[in-house]
Amino acid sequence: MSTRQFLFSGFGGQGILFAGKFLAYKGLTEDKQVSWLPSYGPEMRGGTASCSVILSDEPVGSPIVSKPDVLVAMNLPSLDKFEDAVAPGGMIFYDSTLIGRSVRRTDVTAVPVPATAIAGDNGIPTLANMILIGKILKELNDFDAASVDAALKKVISAKHADMLEVNYKAMKLGADYEG
Amino acid sequence: MADKVLMKGNEAIAEAAIIAGCRHYFGYPITPQTEVAAYMAKKMPKIGGTFLQAESEIAAINMVYGVASAGCRVMTSSSSPGISLKGEGLSYLAGSDLPALVVNVQRGGPGLGGIQPSQSDYFQATRGGGHGDYHMIVLAPASVQEMAELTVKGFELADKYRMTSMILADGTMGQMMEPVALDLAVAPAPAKPWATTGTGMKRAHNIVNSLSLDPEELERLNLARYERYAEVEANETMYEEYRMEDAEICVAAFGIAARVSKNAINEARKEGIKVGLIRPITLWPFPKAPFKKAAGQVKQFLSVELSMGQMIEDVRLATECRVPVTLVNRVGGMIPSPDQVLEAIRKASKNGGND
Image 1 (cartoon, rainbow over the protein chains, first blue to last red):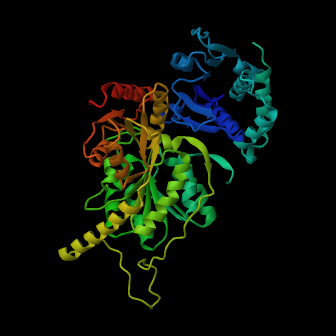
Image 2 (tube, each protein chain N blue to C red; image 1 turned 135 degrees about the horizontal axis):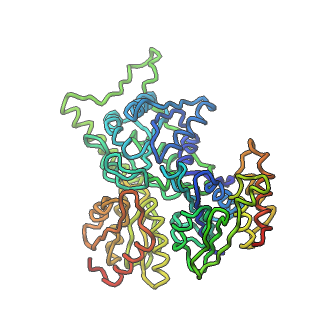
Image 3 (cartoon, chains in turn yellow, orange; image 1 turned 180 degrees about the horizontal axis):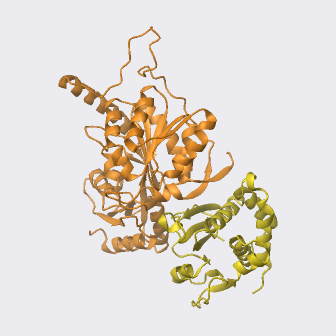
């Protein structure tokens, strides 16, 4: 990997920014160059939230992701808005519980994950975001338990240390999910 | 080197200010710089500092004036419309020769404008911002690391030259997170024998004031101030050159526009186009020398900006219009894409310098 650009998008409240932050911290713990840029503004109150994350071996130029290698769509408006922007050969991970259609692009890899349903079934209804992250890392051959653990400890403050275990559990559920 | 942490640009400014010894912050909330105030609100009470949310931007800059008069490192931060409100205070700080740090995390204008990133306060910042003959030292960070480093630098230069330093960032720089190392070297603040710290019945009163009704005296003050400005211009100019060795096209860009431009330059280089970048880090003083030198080397300049073309005037002045300078821009909160800049580079390459 020289540079990989991620775009996370969904409703405000789904943990879009947190998921992006986790990935950025994971890059940091692996000594990669990283950038994390949130959308900001009135759209974050109940509307769509998105964030750009870039992981690279080289210094990051523009932090704005306009042609993501990996799109994570957690609601339909996000898939509608960003599907066409994904780089050819890229990947689209989407929450198939909340998105009723499939990916139309044929030059990208579509990975549907019923993340919201899995989260609900396992008593962790707020962690659909981390289930998707687990699946992404698995598909990118990047699910390394030690590095995941290190990044979780960075992104979850000591005050909320009780959340470490469930976040890891969510990621494991995602990684183990076979569509 | 210290461990790197992920921080928003706004937070890095706040932490760096504390590291630089700033213990007094006055502000008023406005997107997209609010994290500076939020960070200060959390940290300052724990380290014996002052965080005060003023009743307005105007009040905040005048509180800065007060603390600066007492010789302490002090700052305020805001975004474009709020900086306009501070304009009078900026002029008074200059007229009283007070050191202070002011942060502008720019958003689209004019008026209340929008809340998305912009660089359209370039004129306001580099030409002073308020009334009268004066300058501020204007620093333009292009990474979260630079947000931190230039904050420290800003305090140091402000103290050294008794001027206001302004960090001129934008919404992207303020909101983005990048790894930052906070093992920042800080020069100790110089003695400030002019500060109003109490005479102790041992010296004459120090007076901090910008009123000077005798025109001969006021002229003398202005001339002395501009002698200091000349020193700043001679000694404190900062810039980065990127892939300029053999460049035939030179992109001029600062802050986020420089980040976008680097992507475009790297793509253009893959196509065999000889293009480089000069990134001013100090916008005032403007790095005239590298532009003047480049004017003897390149066929065309492109000024990439998030404005209707403001820095382009300084590029033309520095290059004495010897080579065409073309504007590549988006405004109103929009950001030029690397593709837009690449297209402009390709066009410049084909035109061979014909604007």
